[in-house]
Image 1 (tube, one colour):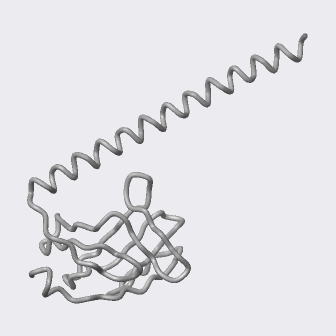
Image 2 (cartoon, rainbow, N blue to C red; image 1 turned 120 degrees about the horizontal axis):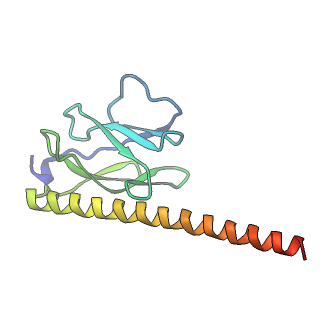
Length: 144
């Protein structure tokens, strides 16, 4: 389907702690406890789309009235291969990507996640070392 022929859609958003067994069309189910947003694919194919919320996945912005997800949603593993943005509860269609673009994007995502994990591990190591130094200094000061 050409980008210009795709329907203009308005979604509604629902903040929920549990995801219903049947997702409604044009509805974003936002679960903060599970750090995820679920919806049926915007193209109408019926596939369920999960967008995990994390520093290395999708970001959710709620402005008090509407929801925006970043980055775009590329359903490359689905038959429809739909690609769109959710901005202020509206679907904005994006261009299809080539296999090369998809592969490069997935490689970049993996590199970002790997770096994030390494940074998190380094932060934990630094915090542990700081606590050890703090305890040693505390004990030194205590027995002066």
